[in-house]
Image 1 (cartoon, rainbow, N blue to C red):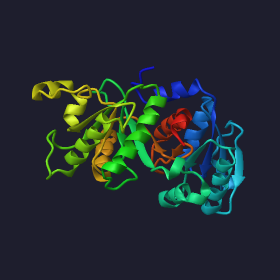
Image 2: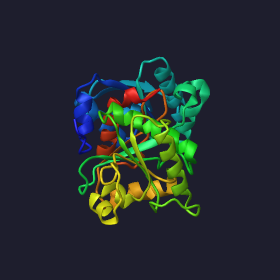
Image 3: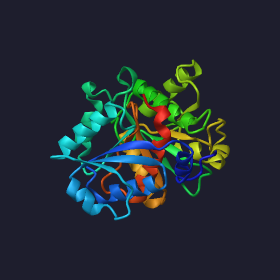
Length: 302
């Protein structure tokens, strides 16, 4: 199945067994709206951790029969949810009305056992469906790794390629972005990109086609690449955009959603199970799509 729009994740999820999602601090209306929607569509089941009375007041009368686990506070809700993921009761973890830093500390804490093999690097990937592009495009990492070097970017790419392959893209086309296609010591992103391409050519980054350094326009526009005489399998057809740092990534994804009107879905990679970490202010539909992504992403974790 070629992925061309964000709603394709829900289509894929319906073909798989529902995953049980542990929702931390579930007493928040947009989170519950998304969970109810996903459960009604058969994508997931859920266990809701938090203020049971408030959760009950926010659920619609005809909501699916969720397990609701009353918690003293958010810390207690987080601890209980993590325990159920550890025990295999739940196969995904979702952030509700809880501080992001607190939530992430539980994910990275070694004793919780949520990190992937060998304490793998956590990274964030988002998917977007620009109307001017012919398929979904993934962007990483705009949320966790502040200024990754080439080694960190290699781990981030491997994380994401694994997910893309699990989504049916057998050899994802990876664009390591820079503001120039030429390697220059004055542009660190170009140096990193060239090093990553060298490693890819040597087989250190498998199962993908990698290009870099490559500017954004050449990565997503064949016309731009043709005009500039830039020859690459990735040009104009990138599946994954690897940003130079978190600032560039943050600007890009906000431009895609706010000005570009893109639908979006995202997840944290490198953990043993899918981790859904949408903003508390995110639209319920974006949360729904992220839940759908998590429902099909389990094979890319651990």
